[in-house]
Length: 169
Image (cartoon, rainbow, N blue to C red; front, side, top):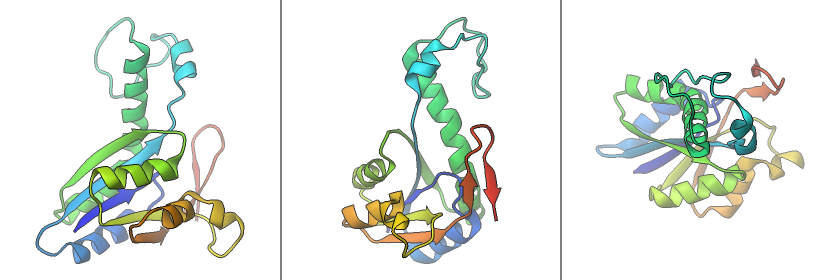
């Protein structure tokens, strides 16, 4: 079975990894992905001396706009997928990782599922189901626009403070 796990960092890692282990059987392919909107114009305006990525170990004086975007995508993406990847590793499940730059997460998830030939998508649901607002969510759009089975796992809601995310329990 080929499984695509789409996460923003709120997907409960241990239950998802356990579920994957049960689904997999003898052979499986698991891809973990996240969609990040890269603020290219903002990154271009930053002085390289002001912003240093924790992934960047070089002392280069300047980076191209695409290098800055790639570093931003990798840095933010790694934070989102690390918990799931660690839980999968604990279950002895290897995974591929994809960081996707995009403005429409639902479309990016559907396209990535096609690229990896996924047979199922696992993703989080942070909104209450059966409300009008929930049907406009990313997960609802993936369910309605994808031909694949979609497993929604309740996650914790992240409050956007424009600084560090606060996770509500």
